[in-house]
Each structure stands twice: as C-alpha cells, then as structure tokens.
Length: 237
View: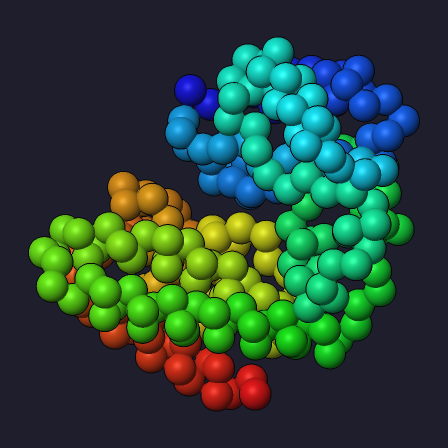
C-alpha cells in the first residue's frame, strides 16, 4: 500500500522530534517517494542527521518509525554530524540534490565540494557499475534466462544513478526522475537502458511519444550496459 506523504510527513517529523528533540539536526526524504516512482512495496527513504548516532539512537529511530502507519518501511540514511562532515566529497553532489529537506539545513552540514569532486563522483559511479556488470554477467552465465534477467534489476537501478550524474556533468543540470531524464536523452542505448530501469509494466507518455518497455532480452541488455559503462568510463577519464 502506498503512503500518503501529506499525512505521513508531519507524523514522521513529530515522531522524530519527540524521540530526539534538538539533537535532530536535519530530516529529509530521498529515494522513490521523492522521485514520484514509489510502488506499494517501496521503502520510505529518510535522511536523518543527529548530533551523533549510537546504536541506541538507531533503536530509538526504529521505535519512532514503528509508531507510524507503514513505519516498518522507513529506512534510509542515518548519520551523525561529525561523520557527515567527514563524508567523501565526490558523493555529495548527488546526495544533496537527491534530498528534499523537511527540517534543518543540509547544505551547512556538508563539507565543501567542487566541480572536480562532482566529476570524480561521476567516474567512481560508472567504474563501480562497470565492475558490477562484468561480475554479474560472469557469475550468472550458467543460469537460465529468467534468473539472468532478474540479476539485471539491481544493475539497471544502479545505471539510473550513474546516468543521472553523467548527465549532470554533461549538462550542468541535475535531473531528479527517470521520466524527466528520459525526455532529455538523445542516445538510443541510454534511452533503452533507462526504459528497462523502470517498472516492467510501465507505459508512459513522454512528450508526444508513447514509451514502453520493449522485448529486448537480458543478454542484449547485458551487452548494452557493459558497452555503455566501457565507453563512458573511457570518455570521462
């Protein structure tokens, strides 16, 4: 069942304020609910920054969320102030732009980052995906087509995030959703891969064209994804 953020958001804010008081420095939303891509099974990805985070604080977060309807699906990024201030700079652009802040000022809690850091995040994301694709292709080589296609799902999810920052470096614009990003792409391989990163039954109107998942088989998707990672990584080095 989908949650209604209009009612769930103030309830979550109240529960976390009650649990942590002034220790709660920042609260926000990330993930599929922020992008408008959530399904009935989606997690609720929250950003929670406290003055510091101990195991007891994680237990307190767990208890606060369990007091809410569907609160067992609330997960996400929980962090202390000092740890966030020490976070690798190359991850910060996508992290900040992929967060809707509900409480506090996330930007002031982050270390400084610049264009070089954004480009490094770009390279690291594509390099990690390249490794994941090759590794998954080899380790699933003897499985049947259904199992191999299932193994593609996390790779295609990771592809969206890699493509998102690649596109941001190309254009200087952060595009938050798959649907919007699809309208901005001109490369047909990127469009094909991004369509397959969407739900398998997704059919949407994008501009004047109807876009749906086609019948490309898993083997072809592996090849497209591996080739995209290879040429993109080489191009951005």
